[in-house]
Length: 217
Image (cartoon, rainbow, N blue to C red; front, side, top):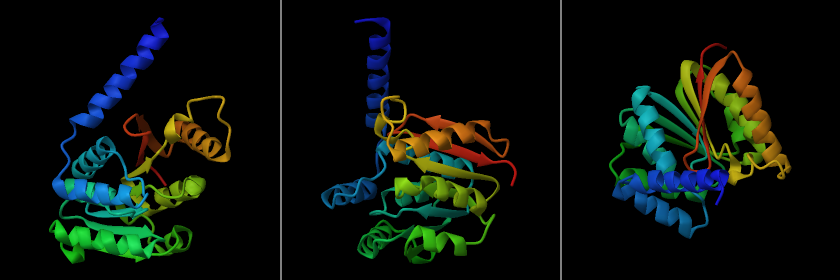
């Protein structure tokens, strides 16, 4: 095995170790199992843990989430910022109802979570700009460029925008992959890397978590 192959193998071991190190609360694990049963892919445990850390470190009071799913990511965000107000958007009303029930089951007060059923493209333009401490995006990947544009509009200066699946199943780093979704993520990452309006970093947890801090409008 050559040096490059050793490096790849080491990275895979590190990734697996970081994923398995997370101790996920029972309520989130139950939501994860339910999500997988219904064919809805939740964020990985390591990504969830990072969401909780960032929400807590930023002392987020107002959070907006694009893509509720069965509530796994929202529960992680509220783990880090239990006193925050979470607004979460999804087009699947049935999934949102299940997520709402799970939130209540784990003790999150009903007045701390606002569930909006609708297409993000229709809902986001109506949300107040510069009103959120943290924006989390985990929705239709074909619309990621639009969602990030909305996210940066909604985040306050100093606020955080997080984008799941930023390396899109390992395909973004593979030059042989050239489909539209991969191209959009590559464009996003390249533009963000040179933008004076944000600080940015990409975590390798899950299949990539893009982290942005809005430093100017």
